[in-house]
Structure formats: structure tokens, C-alpha cells
Length: 529
Image 1 (cartoon, rainbow, N blue to C red):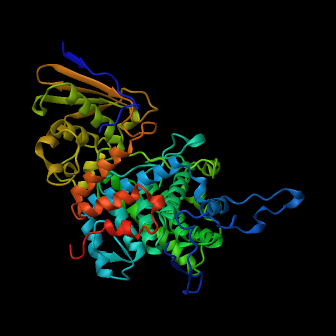
Image 2 (cartoon, rainbow, N blue to C red):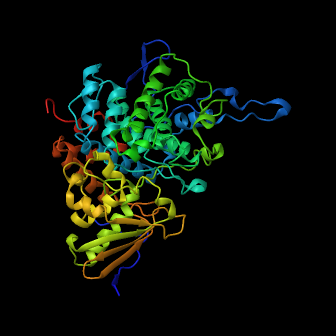
């Protein structure tokens, strides 16, 4: 009879250790007009409200009041929401997301596959408009945002969400911040935005993107890759707000965007570099749509509700009401901050291993096999793939067997565990082949896991967890996010730590920053590096 050493269940309540005015091209001219930012720090927002056609609430037939279209409501939300609508929790959540995403952009500089994009963009050249985080390059605005997004996504380490609240709480959103935060920093530098302006754009852009996600039933097997769709809506919101588009221009930008969205989850199944393209192209396309709209390029009249609009063409089970539920009253701003590289679906199994390692003295060489009880839908899933020595770097990010084996052999996952040669280590790959997922848990909580590690002396170590740290109602404190930032900075090793420290200090007090250009400059690499 096997000896059993049981460890208590962990839940989501686990404790975590550990103004310069700019000019903008005028609509349809190419000339520049004065900036239409929200006010400088300390000023009262005098932005006119609402900035939408006055006829939108005109009486209709029979005296009924015509209701704004959903796209008009979204555009009005983006442009007319004052900074004063946000409380200190909203601001703190946005600052956390910016710190998290910026750090991940730095660690992703030299990750496999990214050099191909850099080489291509350099060969195209172009205007040296803004910097790229972690690099000395200056590129056209849309190129820089795209490349920073690509880097941010490279370890699937960046903050997820922002998570919906209220009636939409618990619905899946995705990786919005891998797009919206790079766009905010790039456009923020381009227009010399204040910290308050940057915060407003991040909050509203994330809110819009998350609302697009919850307006459809999330399905990895049937949907377009959500980073290529929802993120793109968020990118347009961020860029449009910061670049001073008016209501008609921003609505038109969404009409342009409708023909620029795409993406497939197959890149995750195959474990290839293209998994990070949907979010990166969303950054590029969001800026492109806004810049084209400023110059008079006409888009679809209604990007959402028209005959062949978003709801018709991009959703399986659309719920337009979910998109605007509590719009302007509840802001979807709080992110889920990962403490390990790789897909969040790996984290609960990883934390089961770390818990067993902390409570029991055993070596990886003693492990015969690992069993993980999961809900039935986790079996036919990209996370249930055994890694091989022929895999490219992204495959290691999306396999529970690798995440479990890596944690057994090496302990807490680190960034260098998810690049070659570590991902091809024979000891880790051999153990990964002995990790088995079993459909022994009820459906409903995809994060739940119950683990058994079988040792060669007959001992069976057991534990279970309902969710990983940082998931939903288990928020990660700022000090853990700062620690994560430094892990990313030191792995990337392209930005001097003194510069990174200066940027981090400003990111924690964004409301007081007059021009965010200094933050972006501090997070770019020295010239000729």
C-alpha cells in the first residue's frame, strides 16, 4: 500500500510572498492642429461633454427617444470620461498594469523569433518617431508599438485581464495589456502626454477591450484569437484618446479597424512564434486606424452592429448588452498579475509542485510519475501536450507537463527556464513525459487541480489548489509586481538598472508626471547598444 503525505488545500485566498502641448494632424488635411489632451497635472478637466452629435438623443417616431448606437456609446465613453471619474483604486490598478507590462517588454527583447521582426522593420526604415522599450531603435509610431507588444507577449508573463466586474464578473478576457500598454507608452511619447492622460487612456482602453471580450462567449476552438480582436478595439481607444480624435474620427477609426482584425489560436497549439502576432498586430492596426481616420480615410459606418459588422462576423454567441453593461459606472481595470512565466493555465499545477517541494524533502530523481486531476475539458487542450527536443521556444509556455517537470527539477520558474537550452534539457523532458492529466474533477473551474507525485520509495505526495496566485479575487500586491519588474529588467539586461529605477519611480506616481516621454526614454537602451 502506498504511503501518503497530504498537504492542505490552497485556495484563491493564498498569501503572496514575496504639459507640453503637442500637435496632431488635422482630419483630412495633413496640417497640424493644437493638442486636444485632457488637462495638465493638477488642472480641472474642462473637456466639453458630450463630444457626440447632438442629434443622437433626438425624438423618434411616436415621440420615443432614439438611443445611441453601441459604437456611439463606446466612442463617447472613451472621449468624454473625465479623469475625475477614476478613484485611487482605478489609478493604482492601471499603474500596476503599466509596471508589469513594461517589465515584460524588457525581458522579451532577445527572445527567439523577435530578431526576425526587428530585422524586417529596420530594413523598412522610416521616421524615427518614438522609442522601442529595451532597444536603442527609434521607429515609426505604429512599428514601435507593434514591436514593444511582441516583446511583451514573448513569455506569456504579462498581466492578464483587465477582469470584468459586476454582471460580467468571471467572464474570460485574455491578454489586453500586452497591446494597450505598449500602445499607451508609444503614443504617450509621440504626443508628450501627461501621466494623467496616460492613465486615463490605459483605464479606458482596457475597459473597452474587456467589454468587447465579454460580448462574446469565449471559445479557444471557435473564436478568432481574442488578442487580435478585443485588443484592437482597446488599442484604438488608447490611441484615439491620446491623439485627440473627435467623436466622428474615432467612430470612423473603428470602422477602419473592422477590416484589420484577425488571429488564430493555432499558433498556441503549434507552439510557434506567431502566437504573439495577434496582439502585436492589434497595436499596429489600432494606431493605423486612428492615423488613417485623421487623414480622412473612410471606414464602415458602424463597426459593431451593421449587417456585416463585428457582432455578425466575429462572434459565435454575441451579447451586445454585456458590452455596455454599467458602462461609465464600472470600469474594468484590475489585472491578474502572474508571478511565473508561461500561460496562466500552467500556474496552479506549478504552485502545487512548489507547495509539495516546500513541505517535503525529495529529489527530482526520486519521482516516478506525476498525476494531475483536472476538469474533463483540460484533456483535449493545448496545455496537455508533451514537449520535445525539437520544439521552438513558445511551446514551453503552453504545456502543463513542461511546467510541472520544470518546477520539480528546478523549483520556482524563472525566465531562463523558458528559453533554449533549458527548454530542451533531457532531464526535464523525460519527466514531462511522465506527467499525466486525468479527468477526475468536475467541470466548472478550469484552474482547479489535484496533484499526486509518486516517489520511488512508494510515497505519494498529494495536494490540491482551486486557483493560482493572482487569479480573480486573489490580487497580487505592488511589492510582488515590483519584484517581477526587476526579474524582467535583469533578464533582458539591455536597460541600465539606474534608468529602470527612475522609470519605475515615475510609473508609481504617474498622476504627478508632466510628460511621460521621460519614462519611455528611461526604458529604452542606450544608443549603439
